[in-house]
Image (cartoon, rainbow, N blue to C red; front, top):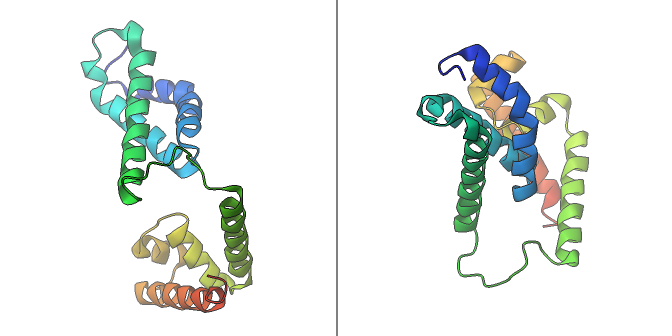
Length: 165
């Protein structure tokens, strides 16, 4: 295996990205978390490829990195949640899942009702986790305009959601 070769890394990435992503998704059941874990896995592979002593164990090494990334994410998620919860179920009750789904659908419905310039900045900041500066560059708006639009969009959504939440 070529160690410091960007073409070799590109081949590794192309060959294994879907398999690593599927593995991460199956463990997390969360697409953004699986994407993050996959990205972090390939970053670590690229940074540590020289450390691989036995190229024959590459797949095992790669999936070990992916597993460690997933479990690091799960630990962070647990530490941000309720500690000491002895419940054995990963998911909520069917009623709680239904209510959560209804809330998601309500937010999505309200998003479609926002004017495009407000919807766009809110989607970029909330769903794409872009910085205000990046959003300004994408939209061609000033930074203060982006900040104002995001503030107004959040305020408008909050006002519409208040009776439901």
